[in-house]
Length: 124
Image (cartoon, rainbow, N blue to C red; front, side, top):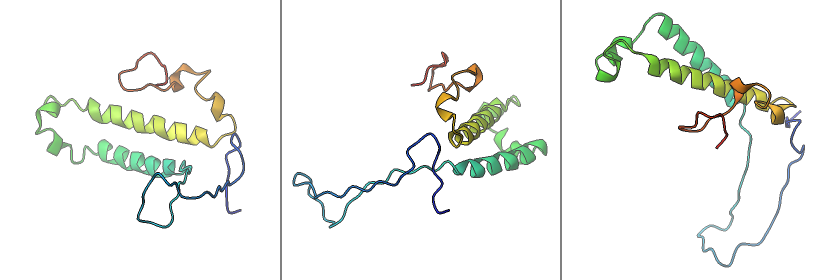
C-alpha cells in the first residue's frame, strides 16, 4: 500500500500538464505545484508533548526562564497554554485521518477552532 488516502476526500492522484505561461518569465524549464497532506506530523507533536511533560514534571530548565520578568512570579501559564494548543493540534490532526472529519468540532463545542483573538468559537 503506497498511498493512504483519507476517506472523506477523493482517492486519487491528479496530474495536470500545461504549457508554461507566456506572462510569467522564469529561468527554469520546469515548474510545478504540489498539495500534500502531512497529518502524520501529529506523531512528532505527540513526542514533543511527552518530552515536555517529563521535563515539566521534573521542573527541569525552568530556572532559566524565571530570570525573565514574564516568568518572575513563578507564573508558567504561557507554557501550559502552549501545551494545550499543541495538544488540541494533535487531536485535530488525528481527527483529519478519520472518515467523519468533516463533522469534527460541529457537535462538541470543546473542539471548535478559534482564530487569534477569536473567543466566539467561529472559524476564521
